[in-house]
Image (tube, one colour):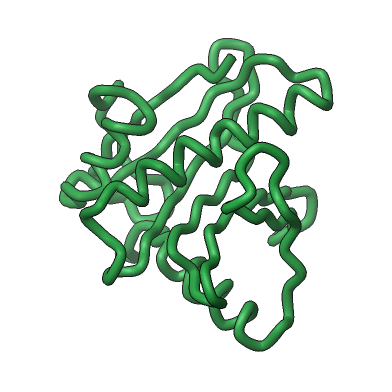
Length: 161
């Protein structure tokens, strides 16, 4: 059985690309301390990544990928990661919230006023569950089985409007 998708892998890959000047990040509209990258990891798939970079080092990373619609509205799966040395000081929750607001701003420019954000968190990842309960919803909405790994997980949902 494989493990759940770990956003830390994406964060570390982006850090390497930043270090090699292989990626051009764009400034965000609302929060000048965030930058974004829109790319296509697979045909027909769009990934929007928000990152806080200070002195060339990633401090926080949030990624959105379009998921199945929920209650008739678009839904985006969210993943997040914070380098170990920056954990446990609120950076993760701040960057997730700022990223959701930037995503809301970008979607509104394209006529989308309401959408859902969903975080699927490993049942054993207590730190990520705590962050999701701060930034997504106060408690998990349901128990799920993560599709790729088959592991037990919990889902947090938030309507963004």
